[in-house]
Length: 236
Length: 235
Image (cartoon, chains in turn green, orange):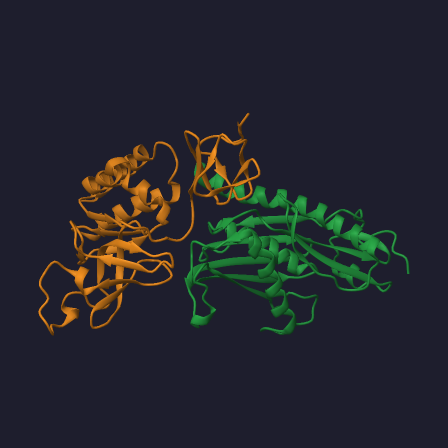
C-alpha cells in the first residue's frame, strides 16, 4: 500500500505543533514540559544527592539516572499498566545514554542526579519528547552541558520518508519504520539512533536526514523557552 | 580578529557561542571548541579583561575551601560529628577542630554538639572526591541558638551580603535582627520578635527572587521602610 499524503496533511519534513515550557515542577531543582502534537512529556531533575548501594558510585563523576514512565491514562483509551516494564526500562536506558554525552557531572563525584520523565499524554514519539524535556530540565537545574539535546523520530511510512511519525502513521497497514534520533545540534553529534522495522539504505539515510532537520527546529524552540524563563526572571 | 558575540551581564544558556577567536579565554561555565568559546551553564555572562565566565543563576551548593557554612548536626561517633552542609554527602567535624575548649577524656560529646544542633562552621578542606572537613575554630564560628534558618539559592548569597556587607547590614539595622549568611545558601536570622524575623526573611527572599536586577539595594531599602512604617502604624 502506497502512502502519498500524510494523514494530518503535513509535509514530509514538517513536525507536529510543538510547545516547550521550563520550570513547571516547583519542587524539583529543574524541570520542563515538552509537547509535540498530542504527545506531552514532563521532566523533573533532582540532585546531586547521595547514592547507595556504594558500588554504584563513581569516584570520578556523578551518575545520571533516568526514569521513563507513561502514566495510566496517557494512552488512547486503554489503561497503561503502571510500573516498570521491559519497554520502559529500555527507554530509560536510551534516554540516559542520549543525555550523558552532553552532560558534565564531574563536579559531583560519587553522587547521583535523578531525571524523572513522565508522559501524561502519548501519540508516538514519546522517547524523543522525553529526551527533549529532560535536556531542558537538566539545563534549568544549572548543570554544565555542552549543548542541549534534541530528539525527534524520522520514519518511512508506506515507502515515503517522513519526519516525526505519529501513532496513526506508526500503525499504517502498508508498513512503517520508526527511527528515533537524538542529537546535539551545534556540532551535529548523534546520541541516539534506534530503528524499528525494515528499511533500505537509501530510505534510512533520507529519514535520518529529515529527523536531523527536525532537530534544528526543536533546538530553536528549546533555546527560546529556556532563555525566556531566565530573561523574564532577571528583569522582573 | 576576535569577536565578542554577547554583552556583559546578558542571560546565556548552554550551547550559546560567546566569542570567536583566540583572544578571549574561557573561565568557569564556559569551554573552548575550535576557536569558539561556548557557554555550558545557564547564567549571566561576566567579562573581565580577556576572561569570559558565567555567573550561575541556579544549581546546588558545591563545597569550597574557606567557605563559612551553616550546617545541621546529623550524626556523631566517638571522635567526630557529621554535619549536613547542603551537599550530597555530610561533612565531618573532628574532635580536634570542634572547639577551642579543652575536652576532658571520657566526657559526653553531645554536651558540645548534639544531633539536631545548628552550627556555623568553616570548610577547611575539600578533597577531589568532595569529602569535606569542617572546623569550628575561628572568629564567629559557633553553635547557633534560637532564631531560624531559611534557605535560598546559594549563588544569590553574595547579593544578600552586598558589597562589603552593605545589603546585609542594612537589613540588620532596619530590622534589628542578628543575621548570618552561610555560603551554602542557608541564612540564620534571630530577632527580638517574630515580626522582625519575618520582615528580614521577606527582604532576603525578595533578593533571592530578583537577585541580579540593578538598583536592588534601593528597592530593598524601600521595601524595608514601607513595611516598617506599617508596623508602627499598627502600634
